[in-house]
Amino acid sequence: MITQERVREVLEYRDGKLYWKQALSSNIEIGRRAGTKSGIKGYQQIRIDKKSYYEHQLIYLLFKGYIPKQIDHIVDYLTAEGIKCNCIENLQETTNGDNLQKSTLISGTSKYKGVHWDKINRKWKASGSFRSIVRHLGRFKDEKEAAKAYDKFTKEKRGGTAYLNFEL
Image (tube, rainbow, N blue to C red):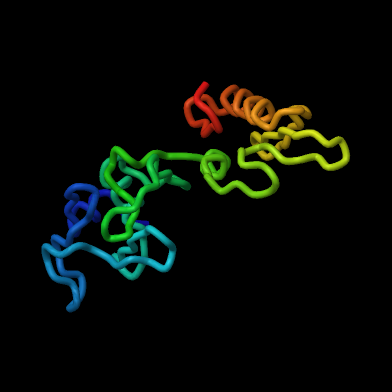
């Protein structure tokens, strides 16, 4: 496992990016941006001592002293290079559930997270999940009311890490 000391030895942090301080192979140029854009959208991958890491993992390790199981990019925008912003201020430790809840992907019949159309009852149904348990939050005549029920539940369960449909 890579250590904070090893990262400090071979890489330098500048403005959310890592640069080589040491040539670990013949194709590495000291002072050049470390790594390459990986196949996964928005991630820079860096190989050190025959093991690959994502740039955001190494930056987190550099500043915090460890690599958590999951790291969240607080703001998911891509830089001009097509890489997520890896400034330390944009990185936070997270759980899988919180990271999935953050997803802006909405599928189904509603334009809101946690809401779908119940064909049988002809109402909007709200549901939310926390710690792998799905909770039915009610059926509503109005789609926005169902979305607000989802937001209320999510805010209660996740607090500051909640990603909501509306500002509460």
